[in-house]
Image 1 (tube, rainbow, N blue to C red):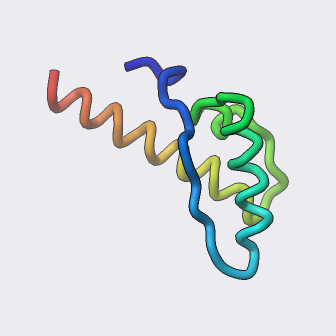
Image 2 (cartoon, rainbow, N blue to C red; image 1 turned 120 degrees about the vertical axis):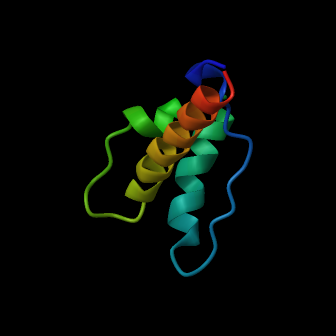
Length: 71
């Protein structure tokens, strides 16, 4: 599976800053973007929206580990 195939189909942030986070995820979903959009995005640091980049890197790393273990 290519990274471009990893389409974002949902996001469920909650809490006081949830509106800030859902806005970012919604924009990626509306444009049909993949997880790679979060990797390539430039976020102010430190901000709450930077968690998308961290989560994207973590998810892609786990996918690579899974692929290596199952090939």
